[in-house]
Amino acid sequence: MAKHDSLLDLLFTALGDPTRRAILTRLAQGEASVTELAAAHDMALPSFMKHLRKLEQARLITTNKAGRIRSCALSANAFAPIETWLDAQRALWTDRLDRHDDYLRNLHRRRQDEAEPEN
Amino acid sequence: MAKHDSLLDLLFTALGDPTRRAILTRLAQGEASVTELAAAHDMALPSFMKHLRKLEQARLITTNKAGRIRSCALSANAFAPIETWLDAQRALWTDRLDRHDDYLRNLHRRRQDEAEPEN
Image (cartoon, rainbow over all chains, first blue to last red; front, side, top):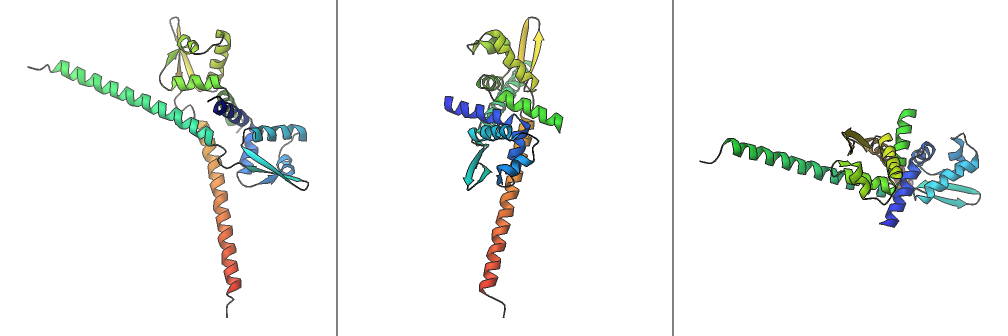
């Protein structure tokens, strides 16, 4: 639980920044070098590298160095833990609405029973 | 774009904390008062209230005061902007895989053509 929680913390926190989301959107279209990625952002390289590190720590991207070129790629199933969490929330919510429906149905039935008492 | 971006920032940042996610999970099961919610967390009330405010700013929850009781509820469609963003990422990724498939198919066809030249 704690381990899963901390990955969710890293994932959601990594996504809470427009530069990092833009990097992911770019990588969804294919791998890119750090230089290519950085060119799209008006930012000093050390600040840009910090964003990449946050994405890497959250396992959203992988980076790989070949010669002097460091390239970045979106991780497979990068968003899976987030989707699992959202699905669980949705299930709780749906379950709650179902219970609410049952409650209303029972209430309706009781009122009908009261209106038409057995002879 | 900027406005949408800043809501996504608030949403993802709000979700990047286990206390705030636990509050949402509790509220997915039904409304609760601040007192009830706080009882589940070993935390000073002012710190707890800060978490609630972050959830409220991200439009994930609504709060309502009736008499001396402040109650909290999960917002309808609370996660919709996140789901829209995830869907858009998935669409880019799928599109990329489709293009990759097309490329491989064309490559295969060209190789076949080369192996069996027209007479």
